[in-house]
Image 1 (cartoon, protein in one colour):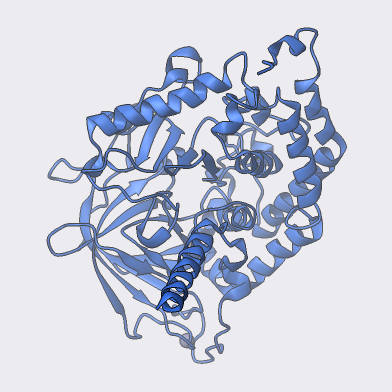
Image 2 (cartoon, rainbow, N blue to C red):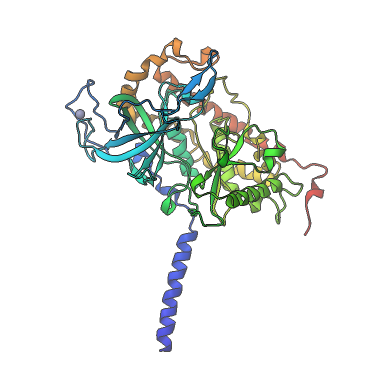
Length: 493
Ligand SMILES: [Zn+2]
């Protein structure tokens, strides 16, 4: 009897240990699905020439029954955006149906069997990209009652919220795909993406990138945050620094909102308004403010009270490095995501590389300087020599893997090779935008005339930037040089 009990107990203990270990295992980054490497090769279709859509990529069909998709900009006489178009009922989205054509082994055609994915609510999304003719869309899958409908989409984990990103300013068409995937190799989470070709009401719209919106999902999909129910007093959460063009209910006003000159707003992206309570919002605001006050305090790097108790340093290091490598200047101010489970530490997530690698419309980027180290949070982090050392060491480590020139150049070439016929189809539709009257970059000399030139621009930029960072990464240490007073900052207890 005694032995039986001991036997049972040890089985139970082993089970508990297994559950505990599997829960505390770090995210396995080795399993990220990188489409151009992992997509199953399809046998080329020999039946069709250029007159029909015959593609190895999935075809996504959206049907609005002819209704205009809302969210396009409305301009004043001086071409300034003053508002966005609405649906006829005054709301921001309209209902549409969505189906996918994706044969397992064969090329896809419009006449092939479709997978009906039901209804979606859809609108144009983005900020400056809303001006572009090839729009980006936000879609939310809904059921017959209009409630969120979790759907697996093009092989990505089930969720109701997705973005359809249509590269337009980025003439190479691959920036977001490339950097989301590389970030996914470095960090706990980066949005998963799949290429597709989009038709709206039967009209071909070109090459699109189906993208996970940054939020939490069921069973650890996307950000692994404890999923909030309305009656919870606390849960994991995600927030974004951005323009603040969101509902007042989503705006958080933490400490730095009052103490810095940052023009951007902290917006809650998870939990959504549906599961938010005033008490939960207040608790999140207080907890986040506590981190901010700590970071901007005299004892910011103190082992016992300092910032390291609040943030996952590696996540901030990687966020810095990938955004610096790409000169992604919005990072740290706009489209900047920070999330935290409970219990847990703050982590960062990348978003939007559309203007990265010298595609800012307003002016050319300066490849010979660092930028993000003077932004909110990072400005303080770089005062700590321990943080700076981590950045420098991690950079040298990444240069041997996903930041190696060979890896990056091959990534570009292999992606282009994988997409090739779809790139041609995209530019059969949008190729006119290579001509001078559609130039989007200032000054005008930055606009190029062919796809190949833009590809070369991306490669040249990366090589130049790597050379600069190799030469100067150590200079970041000047932000954390010993000061005469530094020794007094350290609390001895
Ligand atoms: Zn065919």
